[in-house]
Length: 268
Ligand code: IPD
Ligand code: CA
Ligand code: CA
Image 1 (tube, protein in one colour):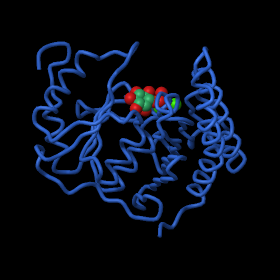
Image 2 (image 1 turned 135 degrees about the horizontal axis):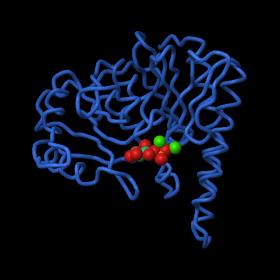
Image 3 (image 1 turned 30 degrees about the horizontal axis):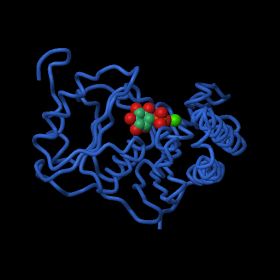
């Protein structure tokens, strides 16, 4: 059983608290599918409400810490060296479409380093936690990335850029390369859970670009604490800050970077 630090306990209980509202709102959605306006306004309300609960719970326990939250942005506390990086609802589109695959993602950054992470799927009650140097856990089970070394037998998760996002052409070039030399590619629609799946050894690897810190901060720690490697797709720079992520085990990670290498803006 994982021995959780006081900060991780605060994160887990905040996530569980906000999850109750998300589950209730997810259930309500079924009644809204038929309304003419569609569920998108309702989802925005659910999202904002979850963020408010997380903010209230986290600041009640740690009044001095700063915040970086998807909906309300950056907010400095008295302690600027510690901040919570929060996505109250990762997988909005799944939520909106009644697909029970979405998560609350909370990371703690201390002096620029991610030291704790929680990714929680409220519907399935799957709780993924990690602390720097303390390992990664799924509920109470210690996680280890997959042991597979053969790229051709490996399965990769990814995220597809959509309307309004850049990099469609580069994504298609990379997808064409990965799909032709791997066992398969999956698109689940929740970056934090994609990383949790890599940490849990369900996926052999994952890549995506143009993400935000709140999508990946907690998930990256999960993968690293499960023995995996995470860099940007290009191999240089900070994946949390740049939102470019390539994750896999030690054997597959260099292979993945090689397969993903394209002359950006030019030919594969
Ligand atoms: C999105 C999800 C998705 C990823 C998108 C993100 P949101 O977050 O993580 O998997 O592909 O890039 O924006 O908007 O549902 O919180
Ligand atoms: Ca997100
Ligand atoms: Ca979100």
